[in-house]
Length: 214
Ligand code: CO
Image 1 (cartoon, helix red, strand yellow):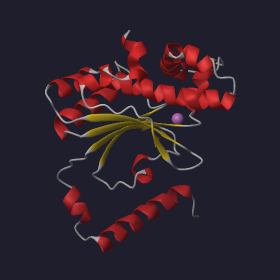
Image 2 (cartoon, rainbow, N blue to C red):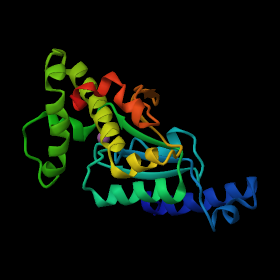
Image 3 (cartoon, helix red, strand yellow):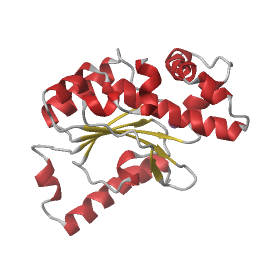
Image 4 (spheres, rainbow, N blue to C red):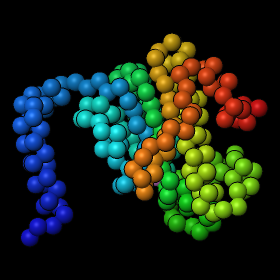
């Protein structure tokens, strides 16, 4: 009986066939090494698949995803991915990509306890606290949610910038740019949030983060 689980196994066979039909060397080229130019830090949401939405092929994107695309200073999982990407793979770009309608961000704006995830969401509530005045000055609920999704992404870009890993890469003069993007579930489109940085000075001179350094 065909069901989702059987379909995905069959889909895999078809995917292999079609790749090999286009390029008999497709998997052979990928088997020994990778040198992706990009690390993607995104939300776990099933509707925001990293490779698909940017048309990237296997071998082009190193991926880390968690609920609400958070960059938490003590998260060993994230730090390990970041360290490997920057210091071994030498990625040139890191994108923190969040999305409108993010359930994690929505939960952080409410008071209802959800469960163990409340402890993770506490970090999103910290982002809220940093931007409380701006967010609460917005009266329209949809607008408020959208702006907070964007603020949270910007906050995670800043968190990324101040990790020892990114700081050391910039101090060594390594080519590394970090960016913040937001994805529209209803449009499929990416919006660049104009928080791209590739040096210590870029961050210091940016007005978005002025508050955090004062
Ligand atoms: Co989300």
